[in-house]
Length: 418
Image: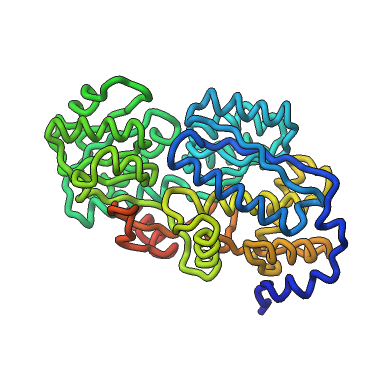
């Protein structure tokens, strides 16, 4: 069995590195389109930059220092597409990290990266629409994501409602690609679990009031409300819900795992709320990421997509290394398989691991990336599988209520399909 390449391997290999590995005279740009103007988006961008910094400490990728050029999407499809076009057309990037929300990632993929031959690696977009697009051959093999599809969160939402004994649930969902996908899947999973869906109501951005939508959802007098919303509209909708006498029994998608949402609604109104999220496996590489995050940022990772963002950036840069200098986006995308090979040399997700990966790849070998979300494996559609967690809000962030292994997640999803 192959041993994990760690700091010892790094130290041993240092003597073989030339000075040029640490003093590159070139810079390669990668693009990042992330929602830095919202509180939960900034840490996602910061952790991507953290990965870039570690790669540069290891000598960069494909012989050059890496510069991450970051643009704010504002969680707005038009802004996101404009940002992506600027990065591709003006900055000349062949790799794009992002976006977060599926409603922003999808138009970027279909109008910018796929037609432009740019590899796109998202940390957080979960809509099953991307899987369908890939199956139809419309992503050109350029799309990857380190976040599991909405099918996982949907099943876990049904599990929460079933475990709590709710007989009926209303759904409020964001009216975009992600929200529509979530609403469709969760309605089917609730039905499979024997739970009545009393209403499913779309929420549009930037409305002055959601009273009409909330009133419609309240009409069926449900036992609980399922919320597939982002913090801004989620805050407004929940305030309306509570003011109109709606139940405080809430099931939350991971998009509401936000201190901003908790503080603006008030923890006293969220005591019965339970959220769902994908989770990192209980493995050493996930623990190592947490420790490195605490050392870098001074607190434990709290918020959606942080581990996924780190892995998205690190895998993309490993693929750039594997593809070599002046590689196209398609070449880099094809090289992802070389750095996530189950039979490759195991490497850690840090400076030492990236350095060890360079040596292995230079010798014609492949590597098995072991990162913040464990041993990342992409299927033919660029999708990954993941464990799940059920969480609740606390004064200081969130606490885990229940962890489900990948096997347990798969088993529950299978039970809903019987």
